Length: 350
Ligand SMILES: [Zn+2]
Image (cartoon, rainbow, N blue to C red):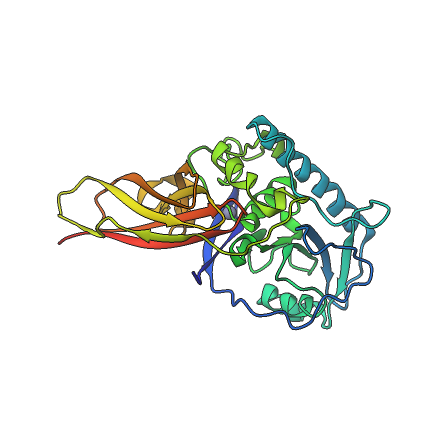
């Protein structure tokens, strides 16, 4: 599975936030250098959220921003704990990196170039420099970029998971520096796709009416909580022995007679660590209205099934609308929190 999904938020004049997700062709490069930070005491097994505050060479570090990063992360961490608890999973949440005294570590990274160098293709340029200091192959990295632009590549932020749940990255611009944007992009970095079933859901874009809604008014869906329950980022004390991703095979047809209005899609799933959850996604372009259309072409959550065992057959009913081609995605996560998102197309015969 080579495609990566990431999300970014754009601002329209007089209109609240829109979020848009795009398939980014991020190359999974091997880290060019090993982690050289002497200060971090990160164990081999723990998966953490690590915080980076990046400034171009000609812009000063501001302690105020470092303090805000710390404060916002505590709010977001508590939000996830509250939501996991509300869904019956206990106060599970992610951990972020702290020093020996328990203080949050915000790594300050000074760019090699002046501000103007980073105004275009910001993430590509910044990531190349971050890689020289940090191994991005494990942990989730939140990178706050302080250029003279309020946005990064025109977005408030975007996040994506990597390596099937073993790592992730999220980028936050100055204007995206608020709890709800950070929590939403973290959700992507943990592996969650959009979910437009309810405007209050964290992985939706919110609504016009709720545009001023603070993070405290957003909700994690119960299906998202069930997914995160297996995530290595929500089980910091657990040892993860395997890195294998689930296998997904579609066994129902991909083509149907032209007048078909409803189909049952059947999958054979297997994973040697034990299956945890199967998540069925559709294309917002077809099935959703309003703001969801801004993420057309990328997965939007519809329904999921809790799984058990190493091998299972699962079925999802799908109502075919008038369009001829249907982009669908199945994301399957195992008991070790590793997942695979498989795209497939269902078509009506002409
Ligand atoms: Zn998003």
